[in-house]
Length: 238
Ligand code: ATP
Image (cartoon, rainbow, N blue to C red; front, side, top):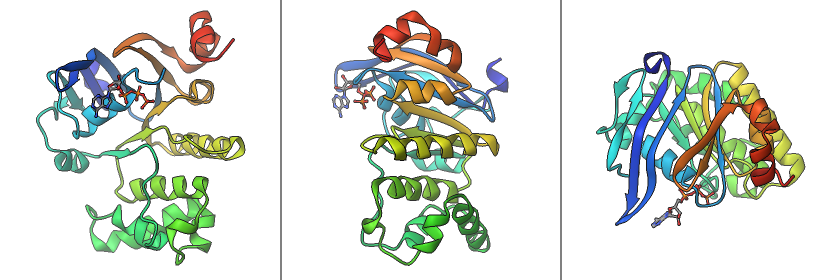
């Protein structure tokens, strides 16, 4: 039921000027689950995440956290409600040190908790501890993705929205990032993952939605969708 989900999106419609790109999208993310949203380029996945985090206006429908509407809330208020989006393209602050990049994610937390937050992130990503005083710009793409993820975790989110974390990364690094995402889920984090890499996303997802032209076309358990003929043809190149 909607009341049991951490995130509920109900009948969401959104447009860029007069072009409607989401046509009544409904999804649910239960607490502690990893839910994937896959689909072709331009299907509206990023737009949906932006509607949830509050940076994209919606024209109809609602977004609820634990059954409470946040539809009209500012992006800031949604962060306080525990919604945190890691945008596509990583966006680390290159001249700033890794540690300072991470600290920026903690502005909603009391100062006394920041050291604990850093410790948690460095435990998850030991390579960031070693390099904490170096500028983030010298890191590899995969390590920058770790900084982007770590910065989000510093805010102690209840819902993590990940937009294409594998984009532009080499296959070995992609495997590493997916291993980390699964590990986060295993520690209890609730995650909504947007990915073009449908195979990898469906392999780790508890539940998944396939989006086509601004609508949910299919949904099911990640593993079941991997075996679905339509999904195999359209998104797995089989
Ligand atoms: P991608 O993987 O390329 O990000 P996506 O599934 O996330 O794809 P969206 O980025 O949400 O898709 O885009 C959905 C539709 O909205 C596309 O047709 C896109 O061209 C259009 N669109 C996206 N951003 C804008 C914008 N700022 N102004 C106008 N149209 C936009």
